[in-house]
Image 1 (cartoon, rainbow, N blue to C red):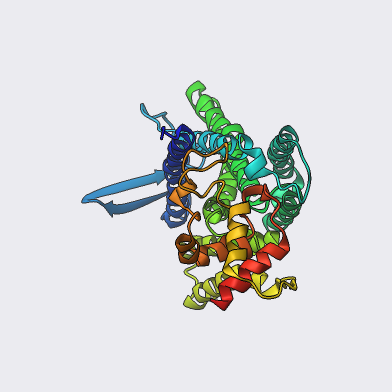
Image 2 (cartoon, helix red, strand yellow; image 1 turned 45 degrees about the vertical axis):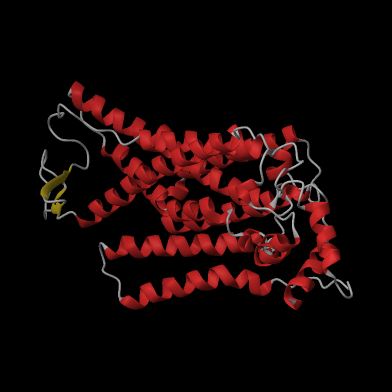
Amino acid sequence: MGIDYYNWLSLIIRWLHIITGIAWIGASFYFVWLDNNLERPEKVKKGEPDGELWSVHGGGFYHNKKYMSAPDNMPEHLHWFKYEAYFTWISGFALMAVIYYYGANLYLIDKSKMALESWQAIAASMGMLAGGWILYDIMCKSPLRKRPGLFAVVLFLLFTLAAILAGKIFSDRAAYMQIGAMIGTIMAGNVFFNIIPNQKIVVADLIAGRPVNPEFGKAAKLRSMHNNYMTLPVLFIMTSAHYPMTYGSGIGWLSLALIALAGIAVRHYFNLRHTEKPKAPFAVAAVIFMVVAMTFPLALKKPQVQEVGAVSFSDVRKIMETHCTACHAEEPTHEWYDEPPNGFRLDTDELIKQNKALIMERTVTGKDMPLGNETNMTDKEREMLRIWIIDK
């Protein structure tokens, strides 16, 4: 059996995405914490820091100072926090291309929703990425930016509408990834098109001896704070592929909206914790909301009961042979796989019985298997599997 270069490529890109994502998100969280914990003087004099903080970590003491506009003199060495964002987006888009674009028929398209050609689905995906950034950027430059509460509500509703649209165009699993990619594109776009250019303007003015306009720093901080609140929803989406009970609920957009709200609430709690010191009930309420957010859509789901009669194991084996063992066998016959994905096999009676819980999760509850429903598994067949599993 040869080397599965496709899976190794996917693994390498995914690992790079995780590494750079940790670096980017870690820096974002740290600087928001730092900004909220600065000790500020009653009156800031020209050329003096807007705030400072002493901290201890790893056996050393650190003294941080913040200048809202710029210091009087440019330091010799200035570190720019940008490559973490750039490489997170580059690796994320590469992962999207390798899995969802190259494997569009398996991962991106659900022909029971919309019978798209691969190029059409890819064009729709990339169009949503570009359109999401353009619309968000317009909002940030409109008077809406001066009303942060209303801005947040409008942006959340637009993302929810995008999730509904993606759920009608793409497979359930891909719909979540599409929204994650849109949020990630906006976050990286903030760094590339606004935060770093504004900071470069401030640096150039300082070097040239021109007066520094503090509005550039304020605009960069606004976008940076937007990124801070988007991080936890993005992290959830990055892991959601392993939990089809969220995106496969039939109303996956609602699950995503509520879980995203839960992530925003948690992030807001920690941001407040550094300033207003919220009481413990706030944290308890945030945790309860997270639990409700993850389970409420599933409670709303009403499965369509199919009359299937008695189900024998021979019926189950036939379903496995028709829809599953082309991939999940010791020697797969599917053109995409030289070995069973994740080493998972269903080509013997014993393995089918051993893995009934996973069959229930992925095939009956989440309905994300077979991938893209490439073999056209029917609801009746899924119900037969459900009856067999719960009876055993």
